[in-house]
Image (cartoon, rainbow, N blue to C red; front, side, top):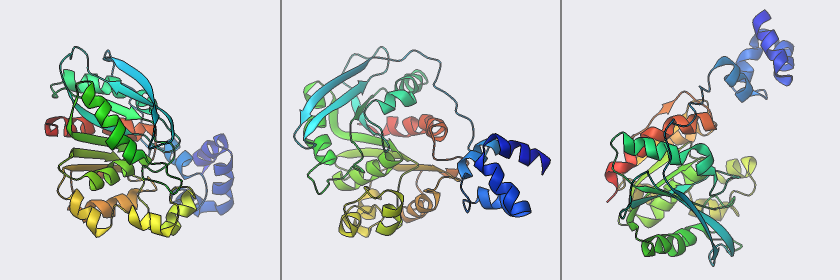
Length: 296
């Protein structure tokens, strides 16, 4: 109790919760009954370490902006290429998490992870990120339409620039992990070569989604129309190579486990980790290795 109390004091409220509940406090906090689960997980090492970004030189990272008709605003698009690659490349579209933007992929280290993957023997490809706001990557009641932007603005721009976009890859984390699976289930295997999702923000119901983020969906009908676990969307995803990884201490672990069960246990796993940058970086090398050989 002495060691735990000293650690608890370092994080304020968690120490109070543990001391108040007594011998059962540790379990209650760890299981999420009391606030502070992630802080305790990090102290006890349950979340795992952040590996940082690979110590390699990144390739070109080119940002541009365009006025999106589908999102009704100016958006940023960032193209990341591996070093030394000058010819046409296939494309992986990266979808960011809630509160992020196109630059979030760069902050996570995508350019260097891509460089390391290609240096390690992966077939070269480009990664393209774009602003998706907090839309949960589906068309909203106000007309904001990120999938329309990707399909009718981003991919044509890339094709005009010489990229091979006939069958693109998709990758994302958190809200973007859900978005990548949703977009794959919309476009189908004729347009999507493979999809890799990390900590996909999949909710059990509209009530659960509204409780976590009231802005995630416009209502129960909107949730039902964009439920990646609906029979129709699952049928499409079963025809696409899919990888799903999630940390065991992630709040989305239960739903991601069910989704993996629905899809017949695709590549990936539910392993140790939390809903954080450390987990997404640890998963990224395997995700890039999964996507590379499946691109046209």
